[in-house]
Amino acid sequence: FLFFSNMLFWGTGAYLVITHQVKLALDLGYSPEIAASTTAFFGIFMVVGQASSFISDYIGRETSVFISSLAASAGIICLFFFVNGDAALPLYLFSALFGYGSGLFAVCIYAGASDIFNGNRFGFFNGFILAGMGIGGAFGPWFGGLLHDIFHSYDYALILALISFIISSLFFYLAGPRLYSRLN
Image 1 (tube, rainbow, N blue to C red):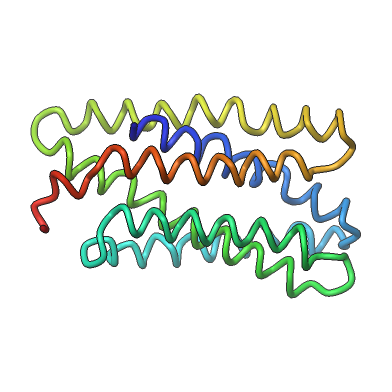
Image 2: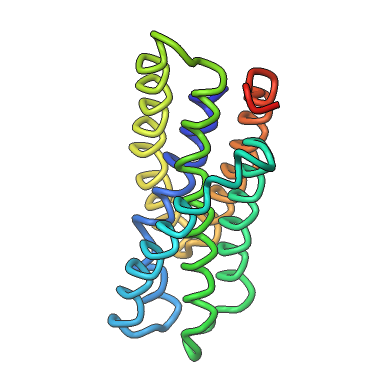
């Protein structure tokens, strides 16, 4: 379940968006400078999400992954309803929410794996979970580009990312780090 959670969140959903976010912003009417700066803004808030991942020790891994998926999804929803190429604030709000959610998830997936697979085989299972990200990372950006080419819009690709985040949270919950955690 952790393999599929990482494949869907990071590989398929997040890499799809990260790969296409500059082109998406250009398509929405933003200048190249504003469009490119969204990547830097994403990176800053990803670090903030990673730095705040300690909250998963207190509120639980599943709750933290749910929050990360909610934040990343809220960022994408901003692209559907608030971004129009005139004001940069909604685009930066997307980058902040998406970056924070991605950063929080990036740490919690491996903290959850540690709860379940602590011991001598932890490295093996971490590598297996990381392979999920690689497989999704090969599929998500390619398929997002294909959807854009077919429909001349990123709408369907963004919907795919949203669905990926939701299903990823479900797989993480089913993996159940809370059932193994020494913190409980």
